[in-house]
Length: 420
Image (cartoon, rainbow, N blue to C red):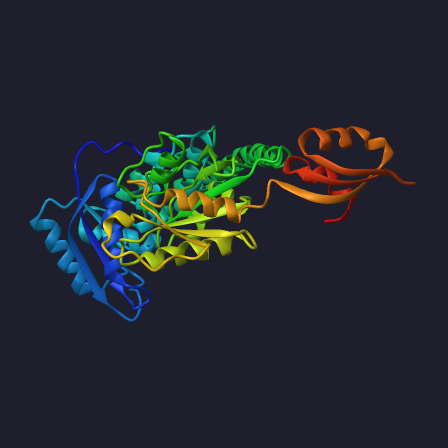
């Protein structure tokens, strides 16, 4: 259920309530970038310091009147709030402003809808849209059209005795959410099978994660000639892309680009795109890319680290990649083994980055002491073919080997390891 493409230029008023929870100026600057990515020009900002949000309208009555005056005086046809709005707040704000009102989450969903190209990506977007829409149906007016409507009574649904249109729409959306989740589960099973096959075949994976618009796709393109869209926009990449990368030691690994992150990404959006982000969960190494030229680059690193913990990534080595070094005049001190300073655009520092990737990855071969049962003779032939056997002796329970074992065979010989 993707959004309709917006051909006519939209002009928006950005609104926010500053309760002291976060830096409102940084958040609004990012909201303006998000709007621009969705082809919306933010022309006015209205903010208010409050201890908490107004339950009816989020913002106070005086500021609401100021917003209405800005709308009447200019070409503004949209209001975007930097917070999630309830059904009641949406309804009251649209009534007071006389134009469509959306919030930060709806804007991100709009961008996701524009940029999802794979079947799985489109299903993820539609599922997130419906989950967002369901509790807000009663309050959504003009903004409802941006989410593709309320579902009507499609799919052969019949209105029962005394059932209102709102109840009918809710029932229809719940059924559609279930259907979308089932489709996503099937695709997830396929993806898990693909990951299992990669592991079985000894494929090493390196996941590129990080804040949106820090140059992750540019890095993938520079290293692998992937030809991935790399725009100076937020969420330029939504669907994961995997390409082969050859390291200085001759090993070939799979480099995977993932969707970018933003501050305060709502949990249900994280849930909707876990399948994309899970590439990091199963990776052998994570590249946490940030924009070193940004004053908030340390926050970018923290946003990513927090999400990795939320996903359950634990124990996987992380290499912090400080990108866009070409934009700063003074480089940081010599980084350690877990940090690299690069410019994906100019190629500066990439040789050092590749060396550090190779050093942090598990060796492609291990020397192991094995006791292989006699009925697994074919496995010995495989070890000899893809690795090296230093000594071989026949014991009562099987063949004892001192061998250099290729990564592809680690899982097959793990039950027969005597010592490492």
